[in-house]
Image 1 (cartoon, rainbow, N blue to C red):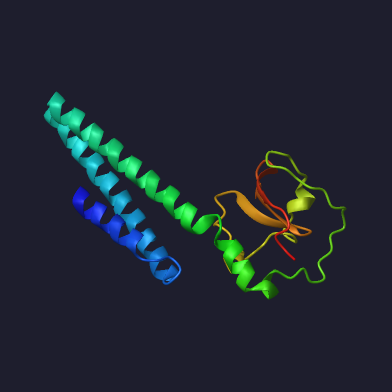
Image 2: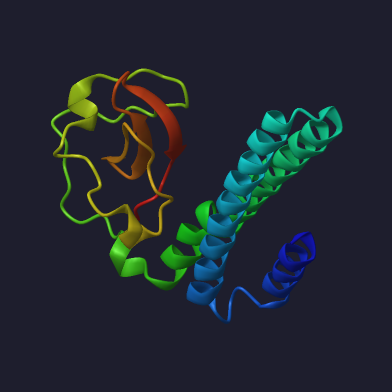
Length: 173
């Protein structure tokens, strides 16, 4: 199984990301799905080893679960590096019109927010939420998070606490 995963990773590295971005993204998603499936399978085998009561088997199965989890985390990091951080920069360079400022105004003044700063609810109200972050190739916001426009900047906000998680200054032209 590990040889198969290694071969898949080598094949994914051989495909140029510029030539086939959608295929590489789908392939990465498939890798993550397989890694999650491997983790579940290793956990099942660990439960079986615990039922049998053989210490050696339990130790080996724990190691296998750890390795499967580590492989999953590495694939997540690779995917984030490949698609999450700089994809919007490349897209913005090719599609300047999608990032034009337009006639957007806010009823409050501009403040440059840093990561970790708390902001009030009016700053991330529904009026300022970016409803379609995939249009700008932004990474997907997590649970209780949303991308918010603040003048030319984009902020990722934890909507439960009002804390800025990530800022992208000068996102819009």
